[in-house]
Figure (tube, helix red, strand yellow):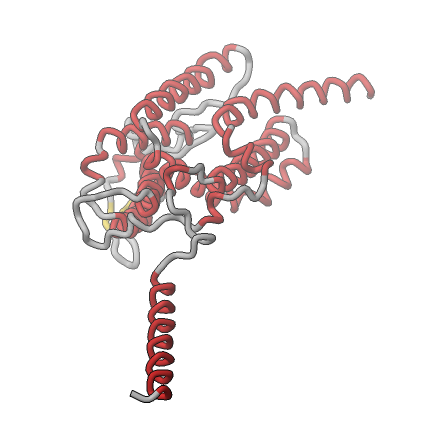
Length: 306
């Protein structure tokens, strides 16, 4: 073999090796983009998104209290303006709660804690506050009741829910949400995309099934998120969590569980929203009484000045 032939062969081998390395690189996640151990680090982006939801909720309730309880015109105007956005940030908060339930080390303990708090809220708003003169603040099945019931359902039925692979579970829950959404209509029905199942009108003549979304016109709850259809947003979040948990499921049908989250999900982007998100529960429990105290104090000071 001539020297020139040897050089050409060497160049050809190097080129093949370079092309092969490129192919491997295309199939291998970049270390700076993908986290190698998703369960070993806190998902900061989830805290921050939850913090955004908490801030929206706090402002929304502040405007509502100012406008409806203290007759402040600009408060009522802002409440009316932001009211169409309320279902969006509430749905995101519920979805994130389902996501966190999937990643929780002890989901049943989490469920019992939420249940105790939800029951306490109902006792406080339905019995204690009316006795103190605070009317129209009754909460029979608010967002915490929904999260408690959904977490209990998921915690005790996890083996059943795990039978469904992650991606089909996401699609199924999204479809079921829209399918059950019309239960709040008058008359109530089930269906979507032109398909419709009429439900008995008798369901809306009693409040016995208020937790499912069926109630008579006299029913009132200051915060109301019935199981139908909102529990499917929660379950949607659990399957989104399953997509990213690195869960070793027995089934391999559309199993994307081995995909980690992008690394930016683990980085801190906003210390403020992250702080709100990590303390969402105490903020939810305290913000309404704090607002009432501050607004009563402000009104008292204003009356003294007048």
